[in-house]
Length: 485
Image: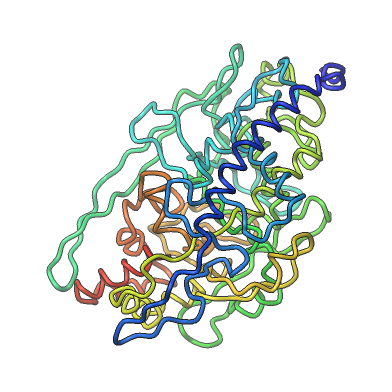
């Protein structure tokens, strides 16, 4: 296979590049048309902050509310990087195939996997969703697996027969690892003003295991693919800022702590600050991307060179592969450039009175304690336009105890079984336009913003109770504000 890769026809890459350029130029032109500075019209009662609409800063915000709102490059991206951005876009969106194949730049899928392409979990660079019925192929939903204990670097200890996550798809001739089913039960509730609501509580059932039983005391954590916007800006936030925000012992007595998850950095070969993933268990975008290639699609990289085939899976181990590694460092870097440079959509309706009222309620009841509204980035090591930008991501990237109802009971480095990273809220109101659903939280159980708030417990329990005690109009104002982000 390596020989075939070495003589791969250059025409294939050139054709792919040409297609990517044409597609990319179309997107770029579209985004440029809408990169306008809309007028700010203040309405009585509340004041619009300067540049409040520029969620990604003036250099990294785009004005688009279409289903492609998450797919644009930043206005400030240089021409050379713009070319690489569109090549990375191609690698992100096109299917990987089984080996051996004439498409040698994209072979090596599986043998077991959860998705055939990055966009299979992040459709249109947006958010995944749990299967809507039993047997439906998941679109950005998977189950992480582990057993009690830690690996050599302090991370979760993979299941001996199934590895770090359940692979529910496979290539012909190799049995998939198994299936899963989600069973929901409704949990009714009532606001103090008498309005009723209902939350759906999921239960996960694993079946059809083809490689023996799961390990003793096995742990399961459901995960949804997150939207991809603004990740390079989050990477550019100084570690010193995260350390300043952390309040592990709640020294200010506000009931909200916030901890940094210190995790293994595979490149530096040392423990580093985690900031990506649902439990902040990845230190940087390159490791996050390489980990997704390996865990989700079975594609090896120089960072993670081993095939995802635990010892009982002989057919998996003996299946053809696409080289060592299956994606070159050069191509991996193009994908990392792409995911680092997806621009952030601008705020909508930010000057409307209801939205401004909701912004004040958001601050007053304590949501901003974890969902930090504004921060200035530090120095990005590669991209100048991501450095020193005033952005509005609405996250602190820290771990918070979210209570027993949201707990997966699966430790992840320093994160306990009930701790999750504060999810960035920028772009949340456009998920419906991009992905045609409003399923939120780490497993997609919440069917809208209100349900997501009502699932908050642990450190956020007091804030959730304040939300429940708002009037119906105040609750709608807060939700209108969140949907404007």
